[in-house]
Length: 246
Image 1 (tube, rainbow, N blue to C red):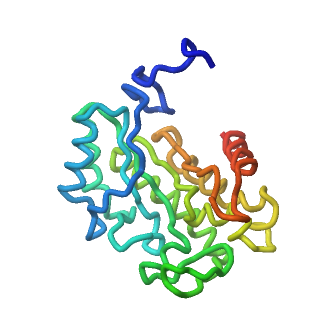
Image 2: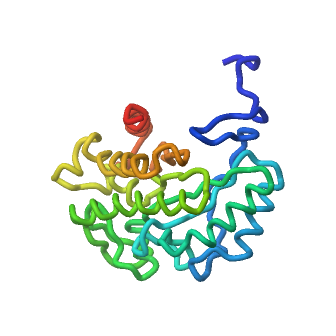
């Protein structure tokens, strides 16, 4: 790609149903401001300031789709009680001329560090909790897929513009993708197609839950950075599967 062909980062862009004033997006880096698991004045002020700074979109991080999916003790959980406060944040960001995205996920084994049981594709030792996690059951897999869909509806009802599904960085969907962490012998493990079944089911459920009300994004790391983990060739193939899913 030549310099003349490169997209202008300051040009407007369209992301599904969302219009961005430029292509600069504040990443889903955790703010650490939600000590009581709820949207508060500090969090609203933080994202209002980011929007006022001129970004194309700001991202609210990290929002657990279920109470057992929190990776730290001070993260938001997208429960049915959230929309009024979340709507206040969305309105503040919109007033500064930017849309807002909610970064949703399930921490999986990482949640063990908060005192929760910690769920993972296969039992693993968690150095955060100094104990082994529990292998997620098929019923729990289906429940968590439903949790992602329900959380997306919560986000949409609050007037948020996009949902970013966290499929990377050692959280539960990422653990399923990892050949190092996913040692299952059922339809949720083994081949890359099987390991990708859970993340793909999540994205499909979210899309069906919100239709074209929200832009739906997926956050996927390209390499786990550990021997035997997900690597570039498989990451690219997962991205292609997600693209093929629409």
